[in-house]
Image (cartoon, rainbow, N blue to C red; front, top):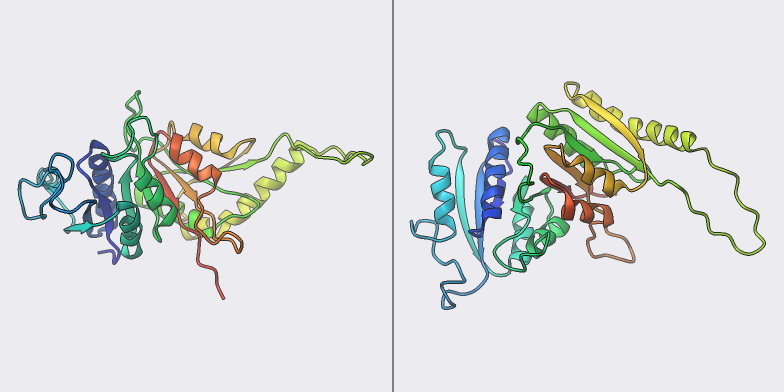
Length: 296
């Protein structure tokens, strides 16, 4: 059994039950403990029609009850553990990720506005958790068959992160899926000139694309060797990386993106505009992988 559990955050919403389904499958593949976590945001004396109260052992619990009932229909289950916490979900869920291999949430919970594409708790977890965070969206209207497409991973040729590629290859190996590596480069290039400056020489787009491909293939070499059974194809595309990844999500099983490192002048954790756009608009589950630890 894997030493790190797969955590499913549930709050009684349909979104969180979809996340539970995804987490159950992930725990099976990893032979890991499935930990089901419910964060009660308010104390017991508040209104019962708004808040879920109770313990995992109580059959009538409005949050954990449906989760227990859902798992009761499974003939083969991994080891399962139920945890109830009390406090702010946006704070506690990232903390739960400190001891998890994966943290899985729905794109929206019971709170907030129905018009929001991504809930605040999912956003906080994806930004702050120490482990990879999977956000499971509401199903697309075309009701695609789950598990039918490739895994997609975005790679930044200027500043790649090894943890993102490592997760993507390992997950593709677990699922027996092919891997589509999307490396986007900015095009057309915009150059700002001061009055009197000479314009720069024309840049050959084919040369930029070729250089991007060479860099991307170099980053993948060690992972290809480590996971020889994974068929990985590099696509080098001009323009907006987020747009390409969102487009790829329409046929993908999972999209893997990285999270920015902390910067000296901006010590708070940041996801980056591409990762946030993919979380908001992707049609398949998205996993946000924290950056590799800095050595030294």
